[in-house]
Image (cartoon, helix red, strand yellow):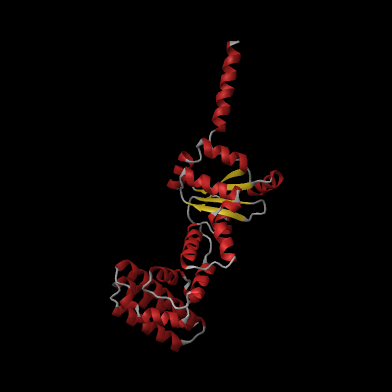
Length: 289
């Protein structure tokens, strides 16, 4: 009798321990997809590395929570994938930072990406957005965007949400600039959207306005630093285009313009050296290929 009680207690505590936190399954990704399809569930992936401190913190302090475990065990197929042993996830879902938490369907379509060691409340909220997509702030704003909403504050909030979720938001930036063709670079929202835009999309007149108004728009050092880096990126892209087109005249013109800008605005020597020597030498080589 005593022996039976001990066995029952051992079984009870064993079950209790197993029930705590997220139960990650020993499955390959293909096996998880098959199971997800059969059970009509989403796959949750903890993309981590053994050496990653934030990954360890997340595993110890968040994944072990009962509330988290109940939600994830009931609704998802849970996997842990080590980035050092399998880089497919990193390549497929553009996951360079660790930890990255992914929610995908049985066909591999990404439903949600969460980057970093988030707290319990954030993880639960993101998981619930996957379970109930209509409650997701991004989905809500996407519907409003598709319905034609284009006011400044809305587009700014939408871009921030997409950026934080590591979702491409170029279409929002484009919509903002189409709705506000005459950007006022002294306005903080206009300023932000100008610098969010990919350098490849800059219109020449906007760039000219940016250059001519540089000294007047950027009084504080942080915004000036952003402006400097933006302009450098634009010029580097232009020089690269010149190299690909084998247009030495335009290349030399852009190099001279960049050099003058660097000198006029007293950009630190390390930046001048990087641009004036490394980039120029590289693109001269490309022109001579």
